[in-house]
Length: 151
Image (cartoon, rainbow, N blue to C red; front, side, top):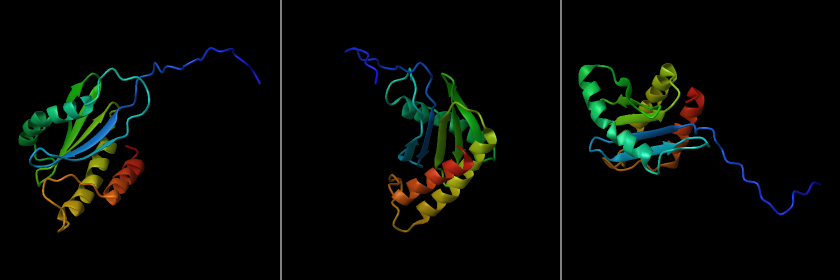
């Protein structure tokens, strides 16, 4: 057993954090769902930055949605090496993914699979329009999709 005296050593991470935040915004601009899978590390932004960046990108989503027939809009905004990718549903919901790693095919697959899940959740006769989705089964399925698509 070694003894280092009475001094305590703290390890401070100088590595940048892995940023991965997913959100679903309803037709009326209400945040229906959000999940933060960001990893440990140093972040220079303050609390609420992720949500502010994602909501701030909704204007760009609207512009890109008019310019294409595709639901998957790819990267709609970039800020401090973080990209916001978007997927606009036919019902007007917007799925947003804040990320640093650019893997277009995986992001598209993730959005497509969550879109199918979202349709089922919103088709539920007990689901309230523009109310947050707070079902543990929805959370578990989104997590499972994230794990299987590696995003």
